[in-house]
Image (tube, rainbow, N blue to C red; front, side):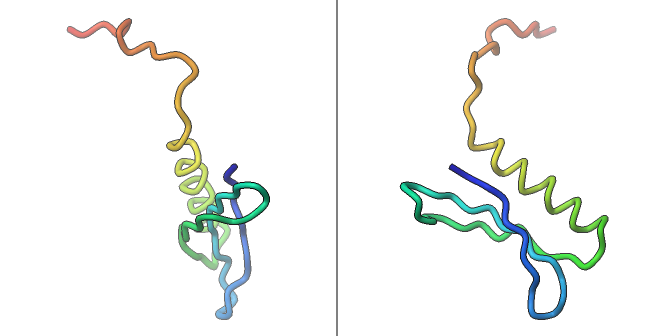
Length: 69
């Protein structure tokens, strides 16, 4: 299971991480970045969600139905 963690850094910025848990323990941490503005934090949160979504496999593989040229 993966989730997004926000935290305050020592410099006062907001850090964003993606944490992966197995059996209640953190097994992997991916640091996405840190930002001080709301716009920057929003970008980091979107990037973190893309990281989580990239790990998921689609329910159905519809690539053979795509029309090419």
